[in-house]
Length: 300
Image 1 (cartoon, rainbow, N blue to C red):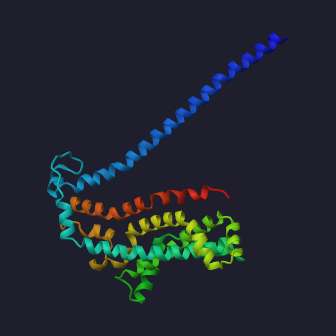
Image 2: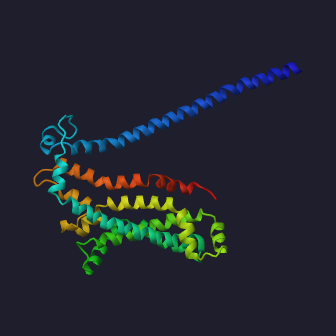
Image 3: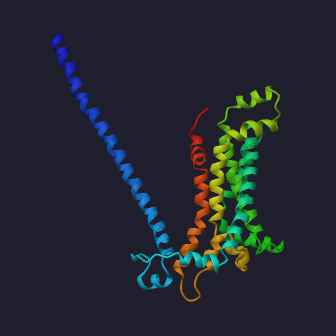
């Protein structure tokens, strides 16, 4: 009896070993397949980036003769010097900053206040209020172009930076309210109650307790909002295309095209210059940006 029991236990042990080995090999294969897939996506993403960088280092004459992807040892910074000295590049950059910075500040400040109020004070009809605020996200921007153009023309705001500032502040307000409400709901109410018991008022609780905890979410929102506003092309094209001195950097890419041919090298160099602020913003807030994106996965 004991012999049969021992043999049965041995058979079970031998039968479970291959299963564990198979499962381990399966996880390893899935992990390697995932890494290969990520590498493929990264390569596909970097190919156009490399193409733009290579094009920016070639003269327009060489591009016209040999093409964009032709390998060459004649690399030059002439396009960067030309686009910085002859084009209105500095003005384009200043205009983009004048649009992006106020819109980011207004949208994040308003969204943070409303999101905190909805998350912690829980007013009656809070869900309906959030739906009203967020409902603007579901309207395609192309549908709003005609009424916005008519409205800004009536207020004599066309060919100024105000249309972009107002639109991006309003659109960003909806996004920031949604994100910040979800973030503040993850913060335990006990922290707020403890601060109130210690004698702090609601303003001090918000500024000294909640905002420092919300730093990752604020950094993530600032990075995303700045990138979205900086890369906007549609609204500047519609509202400021008549004046080059109020064009943003994305509209400037269109304005530096050649008179009779496309100046690929010049446009590529300006595209590289235009990408520097967004890349710099990401690297500055990289740590907080990643924490902000992962904060929704944390449970109380």
